[in-house]
Image 1: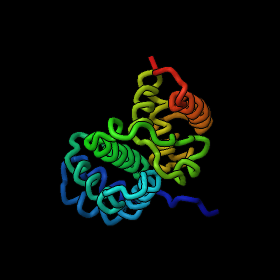
Image 2: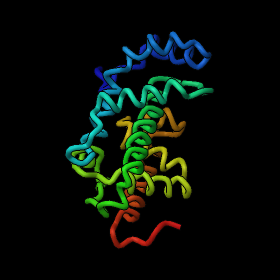
Image 3: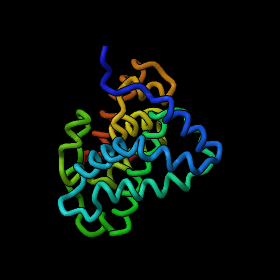
Image 4: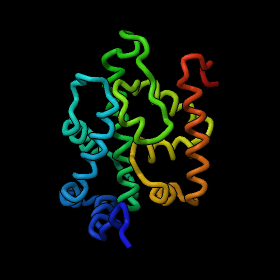
Length: 197
């Protein structure tokens, strides 16, 4: 029976735990093992960016790596947990860049990303990463778990089962959270929607 994603190699989990325990050499050994997945995440993010974005997927991986190295006191659980944190880090890199450039002040709104399906959103150019980030932060204030599910599935590209493992709930709960969060975010990202309270 073949799985869509290979199981977490014991070496990755062992290296993550060693890194958690302060072994910086474990991070150097870990990077080649997860680099392909980090590049996949970066390509996923960059497909949603506007044409001509100055940051390339390799640079996004490098910037995320630099930020991950500085994270202290994380008890890494497994590959899925690491990828979830990497996805969040990449999203924050893009949001920081957009805000630094005064993105919202200069050009108004660009077409917003529909969250009907993960792959649909990834295929749309010019996604307003700042508006999506702000809507996701507003969702987190209402229900942190649902926001975390979106982050893992949409940004991290994790499967329902991987998301359930990271969040610590049943796959059915992930699907309910995913459905609710998509509807909530679609409402928030609608041009006619009142701001979240």
